[in-house]
Length: 222
Length: 222
DNA sequence: GCTTTGGGTGTACAGACGTTCACTGAACTG
DNA sequence: CAGTTCAGTGAACGTCTGTACACCCAAAGC
Image (cartoon, rainbow over all chains, first blue to last red; front, side, top):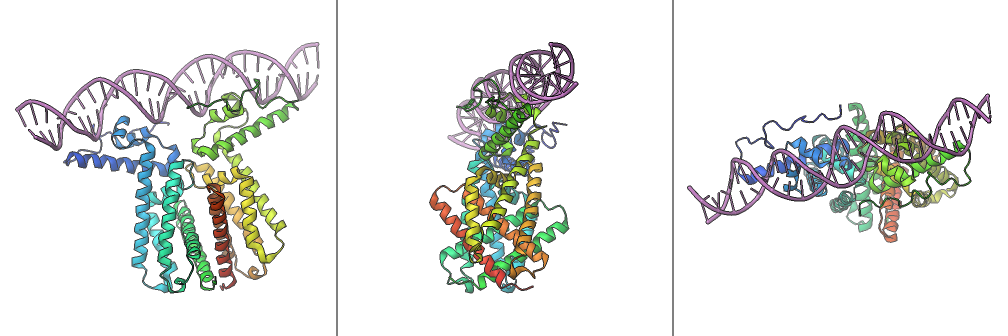
């Protein structure tokens, strides 16, 4: 009951099946990515703190010591995961910029894009949500830093809306922060929603909340 | 470097110094509370997932196996910490109801009460913030459940405001959710703010955000 | 005063962990 | 073709973990 080892792993003898095998560099890159993927998967289950080097390598199908050929330690892998996850987040932001055409429906469309990305790239969002306030300091700090950057990027986007073009920077920043925070919490909700019904409720609630904020913005002064 | 054991602990031979010693029941209760306190302290440092039974008992100054006299396992202790922490949260809500007299300053006073509680009962807030989306399922679920309850309580409070008395339940719920989420995130920010300056900025930003929400509420319809 | 109760002790064990080291053998280099 | 590089191997280590078990002895109950 305790082990359930070899769930995947270990079908030949080498890591990440040789399969027509590319150059040595490509092979290395492939197991490196496999380590990242396995790490992401396991973090989603037990959190980064409950992650072990041996577990990851077991999942990938290589011997524990081979891990060091790719990362100095778990923290280094964790930081790569942070970068990777925020790549997804930025990709979502770009999609929003691109796909939102009707400005009368910014809210609905934004939340729907979020919902779509959360379900499609689940583990990345789970990683950020989970470790954003976790006990592992380096990871937490990296995420908070990236999140601040992300807020600033959104603030810049917001400044292009006519209503907001005259707003002072700090008000814009606060607004962007409020929006990002709401989106993060919404994502967290979606991530462990039990049923389609739950997800629907969360989406509706998020839209309502964004609408309240927008109404607030429309009547804001100073 | 690794051990630093005996930081507190083990000055006589028995747990939680005898000190004029009360009845057996009282003594038990005292070491039980000491276990909870040590647990809370250690969670603040490494998160619940990075918590070990032996570490806690070492901190308290009793032998590992004695732990079982008080809790079946770490999860049970964790659930007690959830209850304890939400006790503090409810106490804060009551304080807000009691101390907020001038309705023109609900926002400023609310945020200030939050700031005060966060710094006074740091570990409780840290526990909730950390484990709210942690990898340890039982704890996470317990916190989310309590948080939902807390949101409902706030929604009830909100319904007593004249402006909100006519709002449909679901709008109230969404509003309460938005407010609680913002407060949670604000608390998280305060918890790992480096300087007094940072704290000030966070407080200002939180007030601004609440004001936006309130303006939104004032102009809301349907 | 004698018995029972029950926190706390001490030893012991097996399993998981991170990390070391010397190694192998296929892919690269010249 | 000979030589080098290097991702992956496998055994061994010391440490930490949770938990089982038999024991101890002061307080509680009669």
